[in-house]
Amino acid sequence: MKKLSLQDQMLQAGLTSKSKASKLKKQKHKQQKQQQKNNAVVQDEAGLMAKQAAAKQREKDRLLNEKRNQQAEKNQISGQINQLITLNKLPKGEEGDAFNFTHDKKVKSIYIGDDLRKRLVSGSAVIVVLGKAFEVVPTVVAEKIAQRDKVRVIYLDDVAPITNDDEYADFAVPDDLMW
Picture 1: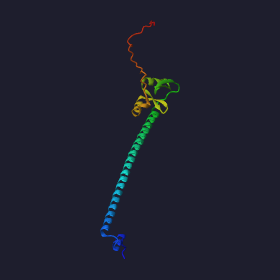
Picture 2 (picture 1 turned 60 degrees about the horizontal axis):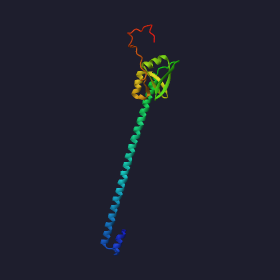
Picture 3 (picture 1 turned 135 degrees about the horizontal axis):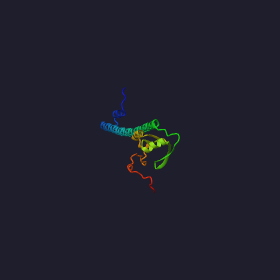
């Protein structure tokens, strides 16, 4: 024997009419469609929110990766500069006097020999920053360092280079000149 639904059983018993049964069936069908529609809207909203969250996360990850890449590049450049300085630094000399210069609006000193002092004053050598110390490198190397990071190179702009061109070389100075 086939099982009948409650609605069919009530129809057989005569407790309800076919029109009432069809109205209930239509109403139930409408409710089911409405629930499916609401469910679809809720699923669409959830899917949309998930997509937005994923897009935000991708943007955040992209910015983080960009920042990491910039930091890695900065570290690489710093390593190149340190290597240039350590490979090309000039010996300061065993005995030397203090050579004063300004760095970050402060007067700093470095102890160097006379030969190195002459090179610094003439402009064939330049003071550079290596960590917390100062080193002296040839001007060519300092230009390479300045291309990578200008802050690490200390130019001695305030020191006028010594020139051998004497404007008064043609004029003789008398021996008996008194001041």
